[in-house]
Image (cartoon, rainbow, N blue to C red):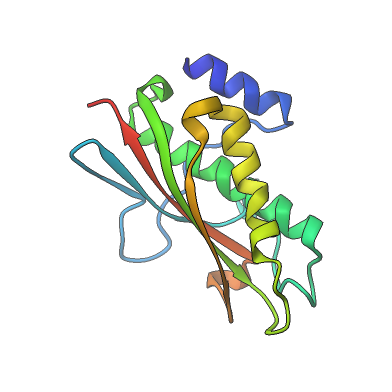
Length: 156
């Protein structure tokens, strides 16, 4: 199953990166019972923030959707690390919460976070169907355009 998930990522043009280390005083994930909580992931690519600025001013919807995809790829990298490399232990992606740095008049945060939802759905299939929130915010760490966290049900 892990190979299937990573194969689906490759179909979309992504290779799973090494999970990013925390940038402050927190852990990248925590497990409580059969739930895995993944801390907010930024649109990191090749070790740097790939999409910065505010959506509606510096970044268009398509660029922000790509940022959301990168966040989702980094969520999957954290899940793989948390599960000692075994993505087959993912029972279901329960919820994504997406934060979009956007100008006050921008109202399409839901379309931005579709980038992550579409990727998660493609990669995990039925187990990737999740609840979600998409929220506009004034700013994000390191001037990132998007940040997304996740709750994942796992086999323990």
